Length: 67
Image (tube, rainbow, N blue to C red):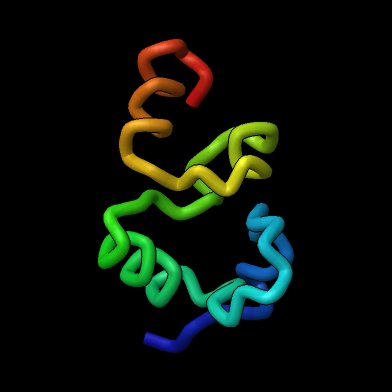
């Protein structure tokens, strides 16, 4: 399967600019899972900008109906 990085970059919501994985979704997901985190694109915009990618933060948002 070919990576469609250019297509993914059009919709990538990650605001962390020095990220080398932008648009490389499988690399991004693998990186965050190794770090016990959720990728930023799973979060609503305001929550993504906090850079708190923890499972706990994501679970709180889901429980509150915000994600």
